[in-house]
Image (cartoon, rainbow over all chains, first blue to last red; front, side, top):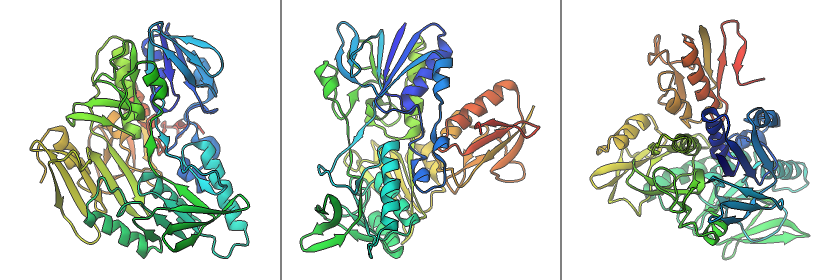
Length: 391
Length: 88
């Protein structure tokens, strides 16, 4: 059996590992566009802050791949997929045949569209290195203000805020809508976060359509709204994710937000599967098609599809959560937190500092947001798993 | 065999992959971090460190749980104090 895995992140690598455990003879190949073996993107924040050394980021050494006879093609990505004849033409010019193709390419950040030194992303290790350099330059510079701007109100933005705060860099946050996570949070929840950040000295500009101003190719300032300009040496971008689906749709693989698959992570195209952030899968725990972007989801989807591929059909069935910390304020999203897909969103335990919002659909709790007090995380998760109404 | 299981609460972000893979050994506490259990029990109260008697199979699963942690917050030591995971 010839397994070809596109993407060597946590999903792709876990899959390769599980396949090898179950099949000592199979050919297993990973095409990975980055030039590193598996590392933890979750640890990158600590790396930028200087709390973790670079070598500690790597979860697998190159030797692990060769010891397990997993071919890891680094710096290589798929260019064309031929689903009829079952092979992939890759950027290294090789044709990689497959019996089973598993897409684990993840999502990519939406880009600002400007190429100015100082505009920073946080996709991967290379971005983390550049961010470290930008921060070091800013700290060492003669600029009086040494300001940083964060653009966007989602998870990546919280990481930039945390990093800039660690280096005592004055920070302004620009969000296009009213506040953080506008598709998820109520006004009350957004206000708790806004007050918390402002108390910590972070400025928030909402309903902001930003423009970058450069000087000699370097970021100089950001117009945060009409007539309001903020000096900025670094702009951390967290403006959403996009799936690079063109290569898959061109191959006839059905994609909407991501690659459309069922609960077995199998696409409508024969012998093609998708796992991790790119998979738009049938979530049997939550009752609708979901795209999940957290570590645990990616890892467990890989484990369940490995079992399926090895002959034991296993549906992916798990309720996972996203967690972050906004300058000491815990934020946890469990399950399905889309306001658009909820019949009702009920606030429990709301105060000026903490809030729980539960998302109900078809008389069941399908998701929850917890800000501040996160002690009820397990009981809410259990209610979602058991398809009960939490109140 | 006896092993020591330790969660670094500074690194733990509550991803809960260890809890999912080894629920008898890890559970989330009110701080959204992983406590260490002994076969589902928290004798002496919640703790980020415990010495636990395990079989080979149990050790394998606990190490899987530790390996699954995105921040490598879980360390496992044998009874001589030698680190089994993560490698130094």
